[in-house]
Amino acid sequence: MVMAGSAKVRITPPIGIPLDGYSSRKEGSKGVHDDLHARALILSDGKEYIALASLELIYSPYNVTRKVRKILYNELGIPEDNILIAAVHTHSGPSVIGFHSARRNYFVKEYLSLLPGLIASAFFNAYKSLKEARLGYGKGEVKGWTINRRKPLKGPLDNELIVLKVESKEGSTICSVVNFTCHAVVLGANNLLISADYPGYVSETVERVEGGTCLFFNGACGDINPLTPGTIIERVYDRSVGTFTDVIKMGRSIAGEAIKVLNSLRLKEDVVLKALKREIRLKLRIPSLPSDSEIEEMKKEYESLLKEGKIKEAEGLGHKIARLMYAKNVLKMHPEGELKTELQAIRIGGLICVGIPGEPFVEIGLRIKSSSKADLTMIIGYANDVIGYIPTAEAYDEGGYEVTFPVCIVERNSADVIVREALDMIETLLST
Image (cartoon, rainbow, N blue to C red; front, side, top):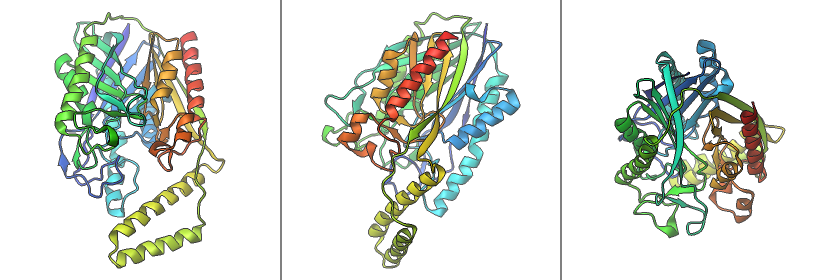
């Protein structure tokens, strides 16, 4: 018999905190359109515990993941390998990695100091509510809401929607999990209101109709954008056309398909629960850097531009300095020229969830799914760590935003490493 518990807590930050996802934003948040939440699900078969969390944030930084895992292991005894924490990747949520003025970074640091405890509290509440349960999983399809932003007319998409349903022995919903592949950028840089974007309305709608909590997990959506009524194909990266009406419509459309699939499932009381976490090393791709003295001269020039009132020029130089300092910090943290991160795979019966850190291109997810021997394979992007875009090898030759530094810091073979390791982990879980 499977035991299950689920809960959610509000993680909405204070107004004024900088929003993340668009470097062109100059102001902090101006208000709250819809609250942000951390949702948690815990499953147990009497031997193993599996703990999943979905955060309505842009990322789940490794420091946050590490702290939450440590709390859960110390307090509940759940192994760190069995805890997956992923973000929905909203671009209308708070910054969680910095790169702001000292005043704005204060907001971020204070928020990050509270975040692990808030996430852990969702898990604690889920643990306290553990009860006998049954579960099932299935898939549907959502078309017409996504576009490949690098190849708008012919690029691949992943229209598959995967759901997991967990209900009590009495038949009430404990938790739903919905997995779909699309950047949470219905709203653009012109929006200064805190929002979970479309994933928030997926979860809210499913919860209202089905009861329980609904965790949304994004897929391999590094090159996948929303296709909303205002989208201009020639300017597919321009999300200033997005509205809250579009957010609600897209969220409810995805939720509608999810609800249909959820209500078609046959549920089981006994399923195998297993988890595996593996360290991987990806080669770094860092541009040539100026010397420390040259960077100091750039900083002096930046200060001079500010004193002269040349704000636009100063901002441009400031961004350049920030990128260079980031590159130096990356090399300082990884002097051997390799990035250490992790992949995670979780088995829930015949469903395998693969947690990938960063922003994998859709082709990476499709490759894993097509070669997986599991009944159903769910790709979870933005899981446990922040490593930037993970493009295909071909994308490096094609160029474009997603392969430029600092949004991409890994070498061109990274996709192959991730696919190979993910498939090996899936095979290991299915054979044990």
